[in-house]
Length: 158
Image (cartoon, rainbow, N blue to C red; front, side, top):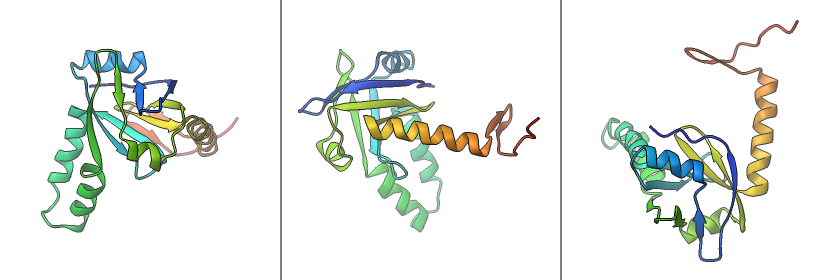
């Protein structure tokens, strides 16, 4: 299972080519895959990238929903139909779909945010602001992670 961590800057050229950061490529190599599934996030202004096996888990979850249900239809249209399967070349580069670049107004400077089993590609300024806002919000909520999962109960301050 891939574990993408860290924040890395990158460049996007005029043809939409981008080089995936070396630590992320190493994770993909360890997972014996060079295929990634890309989609525009439905919650943030970024591109989400997952390895094919991780994306398959999402597809399996959607397929477990009742046929013809509104939830299944919405998730199929949003998560499956809106995705692109891309393959890294021998140097760890790929070409992002032009529609994604335009919709998110990605410039030549981007930031890659590692988020565990996925990574995200953001406009650099927007992505860095997202990280800062998330840190501030986590501090306000005093979020912690217990061994069994997320703990949102505020702790007493001494």
